[in-house]
Image 1 (cartoon, helix red, strand yellow):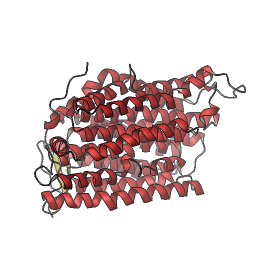
Image 2 (cartoon, rainbow, N blue to C red):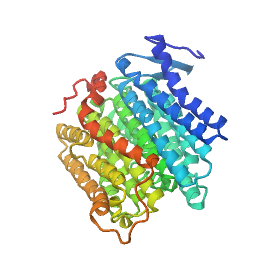
Image 3 (cartoon, rainbow, N blue to C red):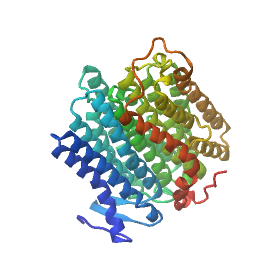
Image 4 (cartoon, helix red, strand yellow):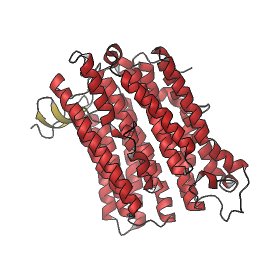
Length: 499
């Protein structure tokens, strides 16, 4: 055992990696210590989130450097180690920046809805963010797997937060499916990779390159993608709608900040650093899973269109939109990977907006169904205005950030000569139009059945989604800067500029 040893280019920057993982844990500890003082408890969560965001953003100037910090080495080729690389930096930034936004919204939601066990809520949110940082900075598959499992266990108490039979039933589905896929499929895939390559380290060009034939690569890639259950490919997606029994801030955390983004981030990481894009392309190992992603994308979109419950509609929208990112990985093209990474960001900002809007609607108007939203936009214009902007981004229309990710994905499919997949991507956007746009249209243009007895949501509820809606629009202008660090990955060095 090497103990707490560090290998670094710059000591202060390398040491920042474990510090970034530790910051949310410190915030969680402060939350527990201040449990009898609600204002201070929530301030600790908010200050922890802001400190983490500042620390992660401080890593951007070092994006092209080889920063590593080894925690523990226990067998040759097996260690717990952190490293900084562009995809991980992107995911860490996403989770860190959105955590304080989620905290502000949670304060408004939990207090406005008079939720119990608020200390427990803030503690497990902090633990979830720590797991996200661990995953984002993992230097190898073993380290990533440990963080992946910690995240599953940390989010389970949030899913069952209400403690009623529905919450317990949804929590069982959540826990069983995520643990079964990771332990039953992902862990064997990691062990097989180690036996073939003698290492689990993420390697530019692909850890498995030259170590396995086509059949083995096909089986391994399938094990990985189904084993990464948080990416919610059908039929292992059921945990995601089951988790909708949780309070809305938890839904926002699951769908935007942490859990599903950890899933699709892992898919991109495995495609680029474990298999390698050239190996996936030449072997055709990703093609069977390409069709699984396409079916998931379309089927989930159809279910979303047919769902009247607002959170269920948004949940299946997430399943569909995650499949875009998985499809990007299976296309095995640098421009598609860039599009998938950008869609991870664009979808996160837009989907957290949609869920926060849903929470504001519930707390303020007690409405949970799409059919009940007629005319609410007249009394809640900021809430539904934010919902409209985020919807346009997920659909992929200008002038919001989702347009660029969809554009890059289409270019990737065209470059791979996958015309059917181009059609799938376009139909998916039409389905998004069908399941999202009727909501603001009903809210703004249909008369309410009765005169509403409320006004706009409270500032703590409406401020965060308005802020993230502005983020959706800002991403349209800075999308190229967001994906520029990805050019530091050798296989992505030829990323095209946006028009």
